Image (cartoon, rainbow, N blue to C red; front, side, top):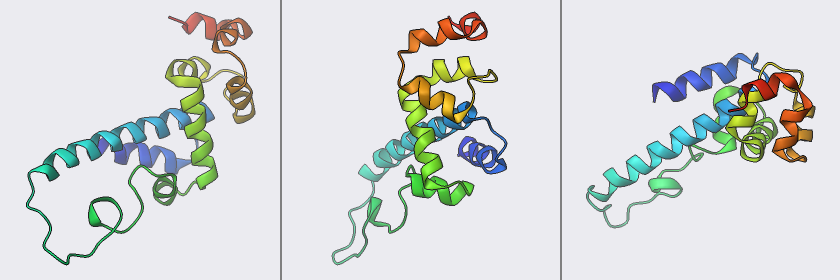
Length: 135
């Protein structure tokens, strides 16, 4: 839970590069999903809800799903579109590529979006700095 709060704080500061933002959004989503799985296991041993209990959404609670773009937007002050773009970059490019471009001239939103359209191996041919970080 402390890691999620730390990621939220980093996202809220607004001085992350696009690759750092994508990595942070992806890390947060993974942590939240892990917590949700943990909660499901605990819920299996909880008593059943009382008859006539009202509620909706996840676990009978109304509100934003904890891993949703809307929830992250509300917690960090970033737009839902910015969160969606970051998630898409993380999904399409992967952690290895985002780590490789971090701090390079390719660490711009437009450049990352262009890399999504090109095969990942071409990334390492584009810039020597990226190829040095390649495993």
